Every structure is written in C-alpha cells, then in structure tokens.
Image (tube, rainbow, N blue to C red):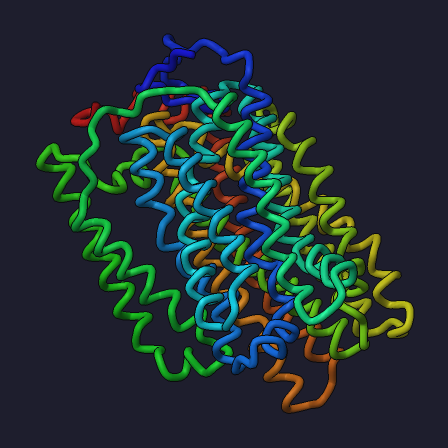
Length: 505
C-alpha cells in the first residue's frame, strides 16, 4: 500500500489524496484495531463491578483498590498525545503491535497479582500500554480509508467506543457470575490474553507497513509539560473518592498554567520551524477540529459518569446484582451500536447535523429515564425505562462516530496520530470529571436526604448539563456550516489546501 503523507483526508476533505491506493486488506485490518480498542476501553469500566471482591480477596483498603480503576485511567490519558506523535513520526503499525503485546502481558500480570500493590503497578502499566495503542486506532483509520469509506470505518469505531463504555458493567458482572469463587475476579483480566494474542498475530499479517514522516525527533520539553499539566488536572479527580478534590483542588489552576505554558512552547517551536509535539494550528486552522474536540470533551463528562450512577442506584438502591444492574442499561448499548454503524453511512451527507440530532436524543433518553426512575414504581421503573434508554443509545451512536469523523476529516494523515491522541485526551479528561463528579453528587444527595430516587435524578440532571453544553457547541458549528455553504463558500481547508503543511514535512 502506498499513501501520501501529505493527504489531509476525511469526509469531503479538500487536500489532495493523489498518492492514495486502497489496501485490499483494509477492512480486515480495521477489525483487528477495533478488537484491540474495545479491550482497552472496556478495561476502563469492567473492573468497577469487581472492586468489592478484589478488596476482600487481597485485603486492600478502599483507597488502594480505587487505584485499580483510577490508575489505569490516569496513565491511559497521560500517554495519548505522545503516543500519537510517535506513531506519526515513526511507524504506527510497530507501535500499535508493541503496545498491544504489552497490554496482553500486563493483563496477565494483573490477573496473577498476589497482592494489591502489584495489581496497582500492573494496572498502571496496562493503562500506559492502552494509551499508546489508542491513538494508532484513529490514525490507522485515516491512513487506510478515504471519503465515504472513512465515515463507515469511523462508524464502526464509534460503535466500539460507545459499546465498550456501556457494556463494561454487564461484562464484568457476567464474568463474576460465571467464574465463581474468591479468585473469580482474575478472569476479568485473563480474558484479554487469548483475544489479545490473536489480535497481535492477525495484526502482523494485516496491518500495512507505512513509513512515518521520517522525522523521529520528539519534543521532550513538550512531553514533560503536557504530561505534568494532564497529571495535575486528573490526579485530584482520580483521588475523588478519598477526598482528593478537597485536598488537591490547587492542582487545577496549576495544571491550567502548565498547559498554557505547553501551548506557548508549541507555538514557539512552530515559529522556529521545529517539529512540535502537538501543532497548535490544528486548533486554529484545521476546520472543525477545535469544535469537535470541545463537543467530545463535554459529551464524555456526562456520558462516562452516568454508568457509575446507574450501577450505584440499581445495586445499592434496588438491590440488583452486578449482572442484573448491567442488563438494565443494556438497551443504551444496543441502541448505540446500531446507530453508530448507521451514522457512519450518513455522516458524508448530513455532517454535523447528525451530532446535533444525536445529542438531542441522548438528552431526551437520559432525561426521560431520570423522570421514570423518580416517579414510576421502583419494581417496574428500570424495565419501563428500557425503551427510553434505547432512544438515548441511538442518540449516543449519532454523537461519537460522526464527531470523530467531522473532527478529524481535514487533519493531514501525517498528523493523524497526534490529532487523534489530543482528541481522546480531551475525552479522557471529560470522562475523569464525570466519573468523579456524578457519583460524588449522588452520594452527597443520598447522605443529606437518604433518598435514592432524588440522588439518581439529581446526578443524571447534572450529566445533562454537559450534554446541553455539547449540544450548544455542535449547533453553533452546524449553523456555521450552513451559512458557509448557503453563501457558496468553502470550508477553509477546501479553499486553502493544507494550512498546517508549511514548515512541516
């Protein structure tokens, strides 16, 4: 396969793909990356239902066992942009396969961990491997596909993102139900091993060998500044259950200042003609990138936190088992999977309007579910809410994959890894905020009023604030597109070609 390293690629992209020739194995290669991506994202939520069992079996404290979940999310987010930049500069295939192999190895180490300390260390390493793997997924889609095919490929990718987040609790509950005994939780990690080994073997055969930009230099100062900034923002959030936000609130302004310094450093490198870690012109000149990153971050604030709220309400408030609790939210996952695949075929024609419609659907679905859980009989409310959750899932499927496609459509392929890593870093930060804030609000209301219904309704209402903010941003972008096209104009990328090409090779 030959690929133009200067192609801007995407739905309706204006930069020329003159060197692009479709790889006949591209769809089979896509499934390899999707399976790997599914495992890495599933591991963010699947472990949550096993925490009580892990704590009891290993004799861990609540603070220690919380690091099994939060430590993975932290190192996952820290690696994304740097990993994407390395993939752009060197070889995405090699980095993907090395990261996937490491993920399998550390999954086995998690399952075999004899104590909580080694389990946490293995989870930190597993999250780092997942963070190196994730940006290669979206970059490989941009590399392998063009035009309408890219929209379909991102549709499958969006379905993977949505389903992996939503089915984590039910998958974990099912594994615990099947693997009975004190060590049953270990199979939550062991299940990754055979699937991952198969993915590595298939990836070696199917993933294309494409040379990177040839500029292997990575901005070490940028890596340090970005890592410190993300760490400062995320650390209080991952420590939220042990009072991290109250104790470490001062890290939020520190993190913001460090990220500001990172942005200034990147601008300085561009002005000197050097290679930045994350080109700031992605946000200022690549049409739709900044808006799409904002839409995704705001959406994931609400999207990621609601599953923990549902699990707390169903298991503690209604006495559901982990498996039954997961089944209660399955309609959302089903709707999301169906809609994401369909959306991939429609995004070329409808564009940002799909995201707007999807966000409306999610708001109606989650808002309707909150009302039903508050007013309907508790014995039947979860099942009456199933069709409404299905509607919300359909909306979610119209958000994630079209937003990926619209955000990355005009990004030059040679920068796809860094751009995808930055996009997913924003989503991980949003997810960290949501998973810290929404359960915290749930517990706050429950502690004051001892009312499970009020707690779940207020927490879901808070999630909707992020959804509404995301909807406002997506609507702004949709209306701007309509005004541009009704006036006979072109998107900036179409008019100017590749605006981030100068000074980059």
